[in-house]
Image (cartoon, rainbow, N blue to C red; front, side):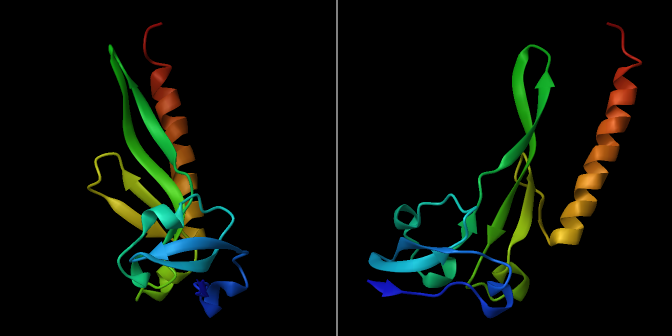
Amino acid sequence: MTVIDSTPPEAAASVTTRLVPARVDGNEIAVPCPPWCTLDHVKENPRQLVDLYHFSEYVGLEMPREDQSPALLAFARVGMDPFSSNPNRRKPYLYVEDGGGSTDGYQNRSEAQQFARNLMAFAERVLALSEQLPE
């Protein structure tokens, strides 16, 4: 089995990894994988090494709807694309996508923190609006 170091030097100091089995175009290899990654890298079996990536479980924002099942408005998860041509994707980022898949965003730590603060402010305003509704 071949070991491919997929932890880029610029991210190595901030990413703790474990060695896991992977398959790329049917070839068995082992790759460093962050502890938050939940992907089965053998099952994924990308055609090219550049398509090997890491994703955490996602957190979803669902909206209750009257007499219907909840709608997924957005989800977020941690990701890292160690072989990306974009250096910002070779280190961990927050990936956020709307529920319809039409808007996505890659965020570094400070952008993700600002996004979280925006969500909290939005939630406070929605809560205040809900107080105006009848019981």
